[in-house]
Structures are given as structure tokens and as C-alpha cells.
Image 1 (cartoon, rainbow, N blue to C red):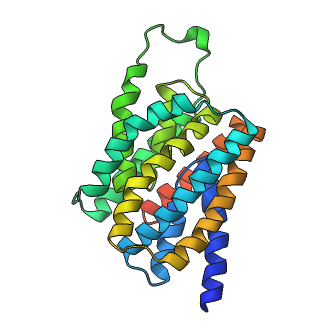
Image 2 (cartoon, rainbow, N blue to C red):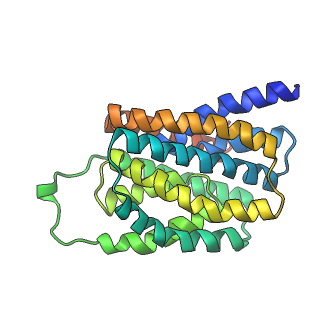
Length: 247
């Protein structure tokens, strides 16, 4: 495969991954194996993918803001809680058996899929006691997970904001892309300083991810929760099957 074909393929793959990431999550399970197949070591593939994630969420934030007003003070407040976790996650090395980790992650995201696919009770029937304070320690964990692992963080984020803050899935996705944009910065800096980014591949993948993120944000606003639920279902099912080694 020539270098030009590789770049074109990464751009196309990035569009698909950007759409999946913004509307659900798990797009990195498509891009990471391809980058490794193209000859990058795992760390460089991870770092290269982080560049695409950064631009994907940057363009998604702009797209959301054009379609519907962004309450920046609110999402900045939540991002401030996730960033310390992301810094720690990008610096701490945690050792775990890879096969065991993948199976645990598959079980977790299946649980997340089931919980998010279930409809919420009407507001009038919900308990009056609020546990919204739980979002802050959860955001620290999400930040750590995003900084250290990244893959599948969108699923965990969606479940947390859906159940704790009682946001609908359109609101969840708006918050998600903004906060993950900020949590991607510490890990991106670490990978860049370690020279673990393939610049050409990163730029090609970023162009695709940015385009996919832009259009996913517009579809989220215009098509609403129904489309998000189906994309989420398909994305989580695909990721779980892959992590269990069935494909």
C-alpha cells in the first residue's frame, strides 16, 4: 500500500470514527488496530490517535455551538473536575493482564449500553433526593480513565451524565465532547514530549475525525435521542464483540 493510499484510508476511517465517537463512543477501537497494522508500535498508535481525538472534539464543540447555544460556564465547571484525573491518568502506569482487561471492559460497556438504552422515568416520578454531587468524584475517575486508556470513555461518560445529572442524550453528547476535549490535552502533551506521535498519520486521521465529529454534532441536534440510542447500541455491541475476541 502506497503512502498516499494510507493517508486517504486514514481520512475515510477518521470520518467513521468521528461520527461514532461523538454520537456514542468506541471509535478508537477501529482506528487503533489500523494504525498498528500500518506499522506503528502501540504507544505511537495511541499517541497518534490522541491527536485525532483532540481535533474531533474541537470541531464537534464548534458544531454544537453553531446549532444550539452552549452553556460554557456549566461545562467548564465539570471539565475542571475531570482534568486533574486526566493528568494523573496520563502519568501513572498501571499494569494489568491485557486479555483480562479487555474482557472486563467488554462487560462494563455492555452494562453501560443496557443502562443507557433503558428509558428514564418521567421527572415527576423520580425521587426528590438528589445525588448529583456524585458527578464530581465520577468526573475525576472519568478524567483518569480518559488520560490513561481513552478507549470506551464515551460510554462511561454517557452513563454518568444520563443517570446522575438526568440529562437527555443530546445534552450528554454536548457535555461529553467539550469535557473530553480538555481531558485529551494532558495525554496528548505526554505523548508529544515522548515523541510517540506519527505526524503524517495524525494529520490525516485528524482531518477525518474532525469532519466526522462536526457532522455527528449536527445530526445529534437535528435527529435527537432516537438516533443516538441506535448508534450507541451498534457501537457498544461492536466494541464488546471485538474485545471478547469474536472478530
